[in-house]
Image (cartoon, rainbow, N blue to C red):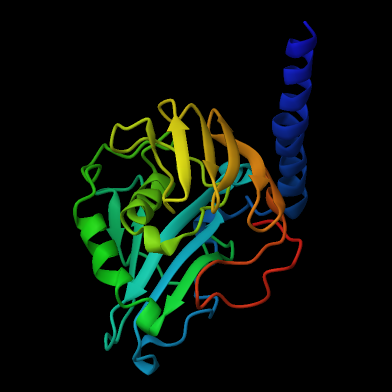
Length: 263
């Protein structure tokens, strides 16, 4: 009984309470209103492609649409090879063919919500990543109409995680609010983490455990993730995201990596 009570208390503290706080913050912010006409313009964190001759790779994340923004983020991929005069953006969505090419501004707001940079690489650091990412996208199995499932996956975050699996040089972790990132898109329930620095056990995306240097310690219950970041000390909570030493990953990551803001 003591063990059961302890587990129940931990579940309340690290899963239910953070989700409740996130719901209150969502309600106060009012960000679920008017999503049909919400701003999707560029936030200006990418240089104009025509003025940037080098290769560029970015992974973005932003709170998802309407009430799902209480607990979930939407991730997408942007890149361009050296010399290209336009960025290529890939999303995985529920509309039409799941893999959506250039449907939105590369660094655009996601239905009014400004994106955060999860990973950034430029120039010689980015150039070898681009063909590997493109090959992973071209070979992604869940690419037909009807394949998308918001929960437990495969969804937008499953897609991005699969591309990261194919390019372990990226060596970063998606936000804990990226519901669906742990879905076993290739049928393997036990596999190396995307960074190649640990192992991930996923029971069909409904539950799981991740242990890795880059990913930290993560416990997945029904897609909600709680855990600890060991590499850059932080706590990971459902809905609230990553609290601690924040900042994007990658050799071109902007800004300091020491602020205590959600990610």
